[in-house]
Image (spheres, rainbow, N blue to C red):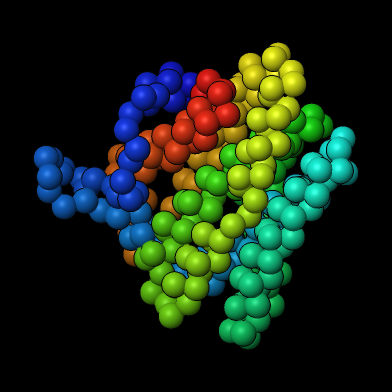
Length: 240
């Protein structure tokens, strides 16, 4: 996995996420990530659950922050993430279902993921918030383009809303500047995060109601997700 990530360094920024159809060559038509969108209720349940976990992660980071500035930034990140969760669950209630019943089927995959990336180190936790939140919001906003539902545009808008990425980046930059040994430590953690996050993304694509999951077809989108991850790491001066 790490060698593959290294091979992507230096590539130009990728366009909108599209997957090459099986057997395609040259400039022939590509298959879009949106074609792997799940049904509306599973999409809402899964994204609401992920936003809830990100909210809980942000609140835990608040308690471990050493400065009032960091606590303030993380509290705002938590609030913005909670707002996303609440808007998604409000739509579930508007459809006559209780959010917890729609989120429940995803407990295993989400809780296993959270357990894998759990850490007692505050700096690693902060990096997780920055990288994982960005990866998931980008991935699900792209996937939402294929939803066959009137809520599609609203879902994309919710996921693309600001959740303090610039402020989190500034916090990380300040911490890295104050401790020159921190960079290599966080670079290793960032490599681990992307692998675990891609496992969740693969599980999500298996939920598609429109297209069967095929590893060879979806590899390009994972390449682009990793490229996005590398750009975020590079912006912090970390070696992905």
